[in-house]
Length: 374
Image (tube, rainbow, N blue to C red; front, side, top):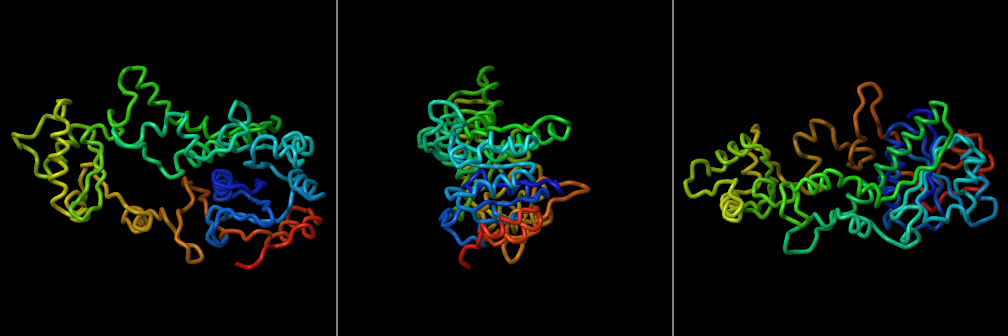
């Protein structure tokens, strides 16, 4: 995406992550930060979602600031904002104002509930959005609470990634001779879209509408997690019969005449108990030595700190270090134009002079001042 210019109106969560993806892919991303913004509550130098961006500081509630944003918009290909519906319009940087200034602009809107609907103007967070789509309801134990998947499922999978897909598709349309347009990326829409396969399976009678009752939700002993002797966990997923047979051989249960048949649904609790007892005999890492170089479909459940050191991820460079900070590398990968971390997290307002020069907006240099040093 080298040569593509993106304006990001600072927000939280999925909007910044979507803009980071565009930056990882080579776009020139300018983030318009707000003076005194306190989110996230970490030093800006650790906010990795602001890597591969430059920052200017503008208070859009002050006279003249909206005009500076429109000056950037005039030179941009994409704008990303994550305000509640109507806020960008009140600030003077809504779709009508921006598309009037630049008819070829792709205007990306990131919200939880969407631009219309009874909840559109209500506050909410990832957990609320995934709750009403049914996605949260399929995660967790049958008799316990639904398990909260951090904010990965809604904000980033159902939100950021769908915004990026929409922006890239709309940008392709512009490059093919079409007009600019608005991309309404609602987390509820994207998360619901992620459940497409489950709805098909449910319609076919192959998915029951409750937790831990299905093939892929921990409802079977061969697709679940088990505690090892040291309290750490293994993810076990030998779905296919031949992988299942290999798994049983490696854990020492093959040929056990007391072991229930896996096709006997009435005895799955016994089968699960037998596997759990065997896994509990060794530590997680001892088991991984057993399963190494096999097709048993078993993996260690790693923590965030452990993941970068996994041999496979280390060999692929899935995590990289930039300016002393270990972080996920850009994804996906390209054979000729790989993504790269060109610069670390931007400090609010620090790049005003540089952006004013590169984008040809001299008034921006005087309107934006960097925030305090961390």
